[in-house]
Length: 105
Image (cartoon, rainbow, N blue to C red):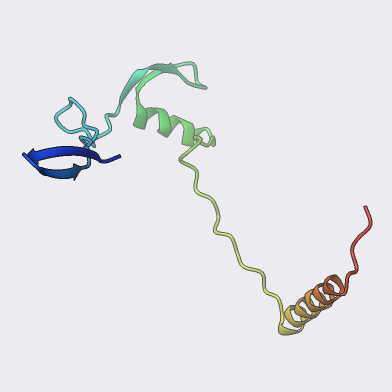
């Protein structure tokens, strides 16, 4: 929300407050470290490296949540006749609705 301030006697101006961007105290805030707290894995060992933890996960055939790759979705392969039948069905439904035909509840 803008704030009204007096620039000089008789002159006013709207000023929007500026919000400082979020910054980290670290020298390179965009870099993610490979170090993590010691975590036990399926093989009973403790790992402090994210890459080592991920390697063991993959070796055991497991999937880390958030790193899995999904297969791309494929579009339907409707033929022209199927599309036209769908359009015709919708036209009939709209016309019946406009004519006052309502489903009973």
